[in-house]
Length: 116
Image (cartoon, rainbow, N blue to C red; front, side, top):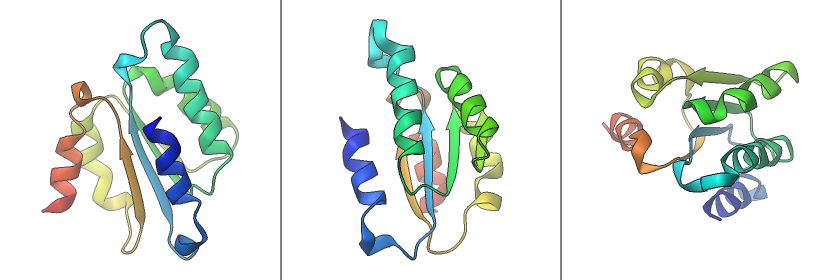
C-alpha cells in the first residue's frame, strides 16, 4: 500500500525537524472496502507524527470528524480546487508534504499549484 511507504517516510527521524503535512483525497479504487480503507488511513494518521492533515472528498468526511473531535489540526474540503484556495495559507517553508489520492480526485492540480 502506497500509504504505508509515505507514512514510513513521514515518521523517519531524518525529518524530525520538519512539520509533517498530509493532503489526502479519497481512494475510489477501494471497492466494497472503501469505508474500512479510509478509516484505516485515519488510524495510520493517529499512529504517526503528522502535524497537519488536509482531507478532501466525501470518503474522508467521517475521518475528518474523528480527527477533529480528537483535537488534530485537520481541514476538510470537498475537492482539490477548494484545497488550492487555502493551501498556501496552511503550508509553511520546509514542511514535508505527503499527497495521495485517486487520480479521479484531480490531486495533480494541488501538486501543480504547489510546484509553480
